[in-house]
Image 1 (tube, rainbow, N blue to C red):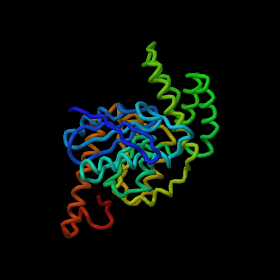
Image 2: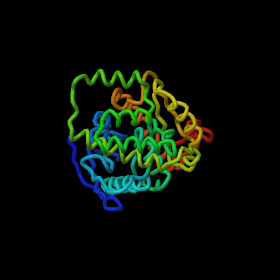
Image 3: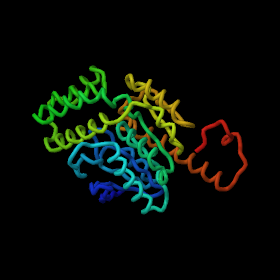
Image 4: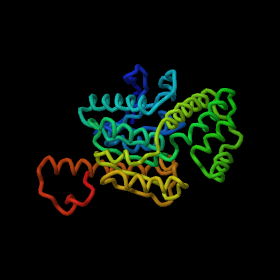
Length: 298
């Protein structure tokens, strides 16, 4: 399936590069920290047979712009709204919005701020515990390491943010072996992480604010992801009215990479259910047991 890269300009003039592939109802896939245009590639490949997939590189991540000043979720929400509006204009249809990790937090902000062009919301493990005053000293540590280009110190600060267990960090290091990362790509990723930490430090850990979300919502998680993610996801599931909460056995925070077929199939089923529910509402069909009150409806 061929892809096409294009530019979308945000409200403040930031230029975002967006990769588009496939045909059908539009889906916007939002990458997490340390990611980019490639992050959703294997999932997008599986969705593109029956969906038009839009994958933006968030501000701070190449080849999108790196704006001056501190980043914020307000700025990134405006970016994502611009991408959603572009996808809607192109297809004439509202979008299914999907985010992973930090991208899921951004998707929550966007669906809460302006849901008009959002047909549904699917979020995979937003790190909502990593926000606010607790992140500020870690941001300072990371920024200091970034300014002196100290990769080990940057990695140590990020481990304290993400709380990835030491044995998993060690396993990744062992898998990398002696391979040296591309210095240009590593620096762009480091810049992106800095921007993300700035936004997280300015955010809140309050989960009750997401109770305002009214679009059909799917919350995804891996059963093997470490705490405090499972506890946070359970609390988020209680906060969003009518949310469907799916926990994948044997998967962790890296499921979008390790199990792309599972991720794509779960998303496709959700999109199909959302479309069926919308059609039932439009047709004025009498309520059946599957769409009766008291059950989540999409």
